[in-house]
Image 1 (cartoon, rainbow, N blue to C red):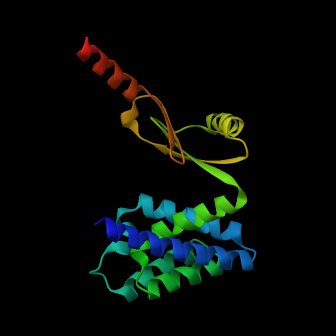
Image 2: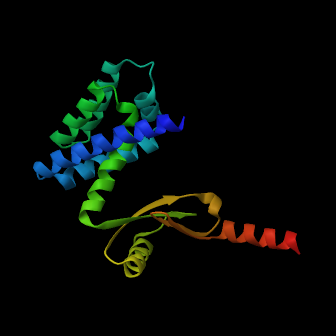
Image 3: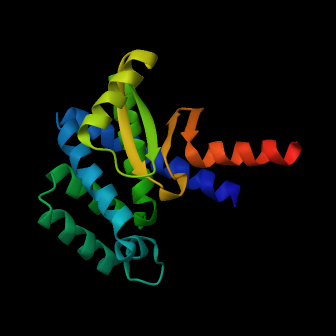
Length: 185
């Protein structure tokens, strides 16, 4: 199973890097990134779309038509549409979300940005995101891209991941530590 994940990761990175190079050559890095951000969010939000992309039972032509329709209606850049068309033609749509992640990671790396994954108990408003971004920028230096997500099981507080580092200031973790401390007493 681990070898299978490695193969998928390799495919995603190759495609992501290839798209980055094409977008850089076409001077459309930001447009493609915007299209891919929207598509990634759509895949994450829609169970039906996610199942469509991953299902081996659904005909490849039907998958291609569906994803092309979504991209056209969304007003995606022609490079993005052609790229996804090639991915569909090569029957690799099941790796599309990972390819998007690889492209965005490559873009961030080349721009010298650090990505911070921020998980909160409830959605952060614009002011909170701005303050958090400024705090992370002061601590880490350079550009910081914050990727917010919500996990209501945290009860309160934040979990921040930057690379291999993680700061867990969630109420859930504090309560677990207190529970372990009380068991030991």
